[in-house]
Length: 385
Image (cartoon, rainbow, N blue to C red):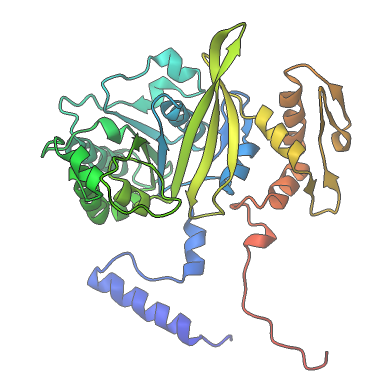
């Protein structure tokens, strides 16, 4: 019988006594926490297939329930559109409960929401009379509690809550001094409200498997003549300090117009991962967004793979040739130049599960149990060698 280690004994005692004293849900090793990860997979809702580009961008198979994603961008950059895509991915991949907290009194029409692949019938919209930040946060608590107490107490499905946006939500104390407080860099009412909320409630939302997505509009900092550090950002968001501190993921966005015959038909939305507590940050991607058709997640994936030939675990190289046409020798994908060629190429990739998993492993996408995710005790030296 294998002898119990001192650490195993410690964890057993702490876990047992903590539950007796109701100090929490118990103690475990950091290694054991990985076994409790609840992934909301990235999924292309339009083509009903994986979204390898987003897996690479975030370095994981999806977003983790129990975490927070902050989306920050200037006005009109596509923040709300990406939130609708996130709802669609959560619905398609794990039939998640979707709650949309709208602060601007401008909920999008159902057909617009459906253009991103989301089902408007399966998104809850709390029509609050008073849309103060305090009221919205209270409603998030109340709605999630109803789901976990009376609808899905076994937590078969995660919950995704989108707050669109915190920038338009006043506080019960009023926000007249908010701009002044932010210009000085001191906590305003939003910061105090969010700090208290995260301190008191965020642990509970984590246990309820809630992915909280908060949209925040970037605004210019007001220069008050104070000292500026080299490289310091010139933009900020409301409640930046508590949001940035508690977020597991932070993504910034901007876009450039997509035009046809001089008319704007969409936008090229650029995404940059600024914070990621699962995988390395700093990755960037540009995704086409066409009005009425949603995001194209496959064309930029081909572009990414074409720029970065991948050495597969099998030893082969997965390479895409791309000029005025697209060609992939490994898949016998011959030269194609039509706009649909890239989507067809990615369908061929997804139709080959072994190749897809090798690509994920080579791109170091977490959540599938690949070798690079594993760890173990240090090996004892072999005296005979």
